[in-house]
Length: 273
Image (cartoon, rainbow, N blue to C red; front, side, top):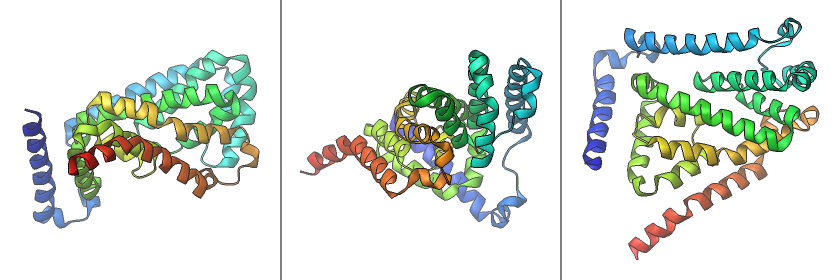
């Protein structure tokens, strides 16, 4: 039953992309069309408002003096200033600060707002390596989960519109690795082969089971989280975000990723023999 379902979904996706390419409207620029229906747009806006309201309520519990210091960092200079401003608040109101930090991180991850790497660096600067890694992995997994289910609800037309070729490639790779899907998803999470944003959005569209997605995210994000959080300890010495992932770091990540897919490679070798 499962192969039939996968085949049907493949045909549906192929038909959708093909129709978009062959029709007159498919020849227009992507910017000329909006992929979501009114219902899907209403659902996405409703979810966004619910998350925003919860985030606002959390911030309302903060002391009034701290509001002026709140700003999502967009550079290392912003991050250093935010760290200095929030250090005393984090030590005096640890529970409130952690709640606000988690809510902000999950909100950004759910709605694909850039800047979570700065939040990860901030966790290292304020909480140290162990607590920082736990916080980052928890929030990144929770945010990816929210993004997964939101995409499952309304994401198909959006993903097909934005990345038709990449989605077709991803679906083909998933189809070839159904028997060892966890290993493949771990490889994708550990290495920068595909953007995490795309993985979060596309996984439910190509029928990646949630338990596989969850485990791969929870475990696969640990190496990158450790690298980023540890860098946050010396945030004053960091010159650029690009310095986080130099050749040596990328080599280590790909080595860990290769180890994660080694069982799949060995199994294929036995089959061919």
